[in-house]
Image (cartoon, rainbow, N blue to C red; front, side, top):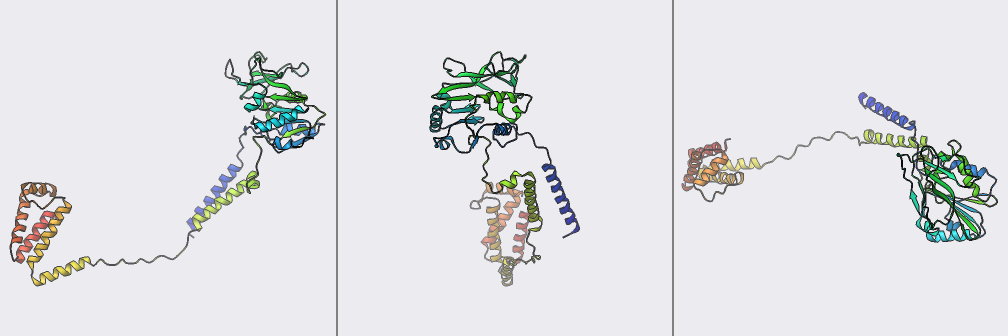
Length: 399
């Protein structure tokens, strides 16, 4: 290995190591992906709410299976809390869940997008809020109950998608909360319902359309945690609270054997560095080393030697007639293949065309053809005539 090769390889490895270190230490951008998973500390995770509920004096239970499977045990009673950006519940599962509510239990649906079967069950329709003045889409939210309503509405201080229920005659549920987009002054002038309560048999169903109000970002901003406390005050404290982990956008699936390595930033970059190092080794050191391959002289082409031998035999025998006939035949074949001109009919048009293509004069072409015709008609050809023919053909080919 040469000195220059070693220096180049060392600099390349150091450069890759520097890039790896810079990438590993680069500040991570804020992840605004809606997760609502209890273990996520990102802005739209729910770790703050989850940990706060665990500290309360309530019976708290986590559910990691679908509601249909969880409610097979008919002895379970309490409040079932669903919190996610969207809830798409199967019809059979919804029937099972609502039958459980009719027995005297409570269910909390908190999501921006609800499945059509759920909305149709309670004759609900939702609409997107559009700002009437300006382009601000920062929502204000508040409750309607006098004991829970805040003097000033709570502000979600970030541009976001906001929905509300369409207020019409079919809206049978009790309105518990309102929302509108921020305007100046910050008062609710044109509110839309975003929090409802409806009875079902002996139980109660709560539907809330702003899961972001229970996210880490909202709860840690100013005194917004009071809003979540007041909403969740509707949960019966004497009953068990079931926290759903199944319907979560950000739930994790540990299906890869590399999960532990790729989930840890130091281990992840160490793994990448090993792969990069392996590739460098394959490129520079993985080539098969062998001694130089000797140059093998290709077999000699004896066609020219054979031709010269045959020509020598004709010359030794002084058979100039046969040689001239061969040369004339080869020349005519050259004209047909090289100039693409038929030699069947010889006339003035033929002389003119061949002279133009071969860049010879018409007189020279006629003289060559007359010489070939004369030699073909003769029974014997002298050496001088053969040399004259050879000279004329060379002059025609300009060689």
